[in-house]
Image 1: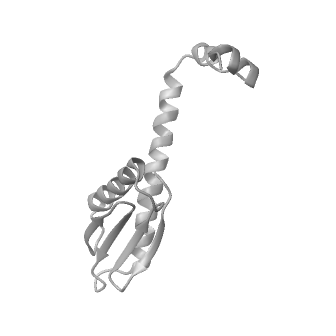
Image 2 (image 1 turned 120 degrees about the vertical axis):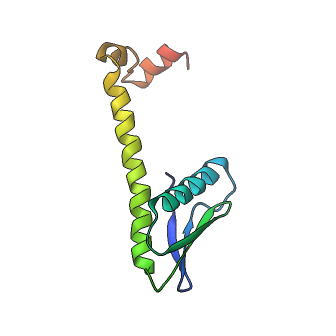
Length: 117
C-alpha cells in the first residue's frame, strides 16, 4: 500500500492523506484502505468517506478515540504489506532455482546483453 499520513479532524474523525495528486494507484489505495477499515469492524467507526487522495474515517468519540483508530489503521495498512510480501515469496519459492538463475543478471552489462537494452 502507498504511504499516507494521519491527521485528526475535530474530535470525531481522522484523515488518511495520500500524495496530493489524482492518479489510479492513489485511488486504488484509498479504496483498499476504506475496504480494510470497514471489514475490520473497528469499534466506534461510523463510516469512511473516500476522496481522490484521502480517506476520512469518522468515529464515535464516546466509544473510541483518535489514537486507537490511528493505531488500528496503521496496523491494517502494515498487515496488507506483510501479506503481499509473503505472497511474493511464496510464488518465488515455487519457481525452480535453475529457472530463476537463467533470468538473474548480476551486472548491468549482462542485463543489457540479455534484454537488448
